[in-house]
Amino acid sequence: MTTTVIVILLVLIVIFVGWGISIYNRLISAKNQVSNQFANIDVILKQRADQIPQLVAVAEKAMEHEKTLFTSLSDARQHYFNAQDVNEKIAASNEMGRALKGLIAVAENYPTLISGEQFTQLQIALSEVEDKIAQRREGFNDATTEYNTAIQMFPDSLIANAFNFTSLPLLEISEDEKKYDGIQFK
Image (cartoon, rainbow, N blue to C red; front, side):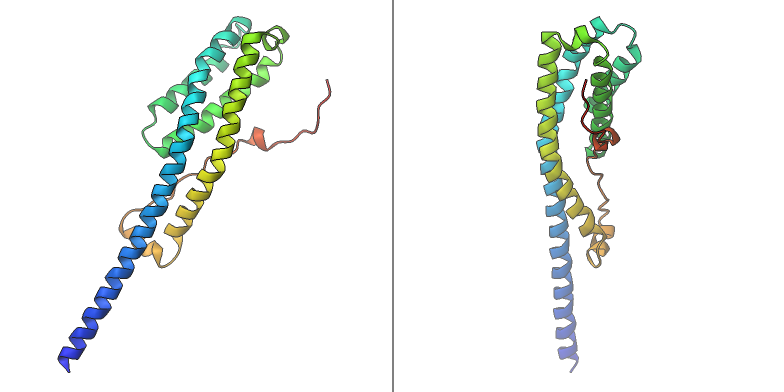
């Protein structure tokens, strides 16, 4: 009888360990999917960061008194390049996006600047990069939401907590991007 109890306990232990390994592997897979999706975005975020010096150089000539705007844009770019992990890169990316939107908004007050060929080409290139970011942001946010949900749901949360899996931030849409002021005729 004791042999039967021992066998049953061993079988239960093997099942429990197998179940834990299965959950752990699923969480690792979800986390790796988030990393993969962010790597796809990271390439484009770097392109956007690389365009900033050109945009600033062209705009600086026309907008001498907008130094704080250029400083915040430059700082945001530097924060992106200095970011060490996904969380820092996402925060820097959001900061860079806000600064770029501010530059474009202020540039509209300078007709000679926005009518210039260099600025127009840079603005088109930046717009294309922003479109690519928007397309890839959806995949990243889906993968991140799936991962965050997995580490919060019971019983997966037991394994997630034991192995220090932590929630990851989403790539957010800025408040300016969410606003819709209707069609503006000028």
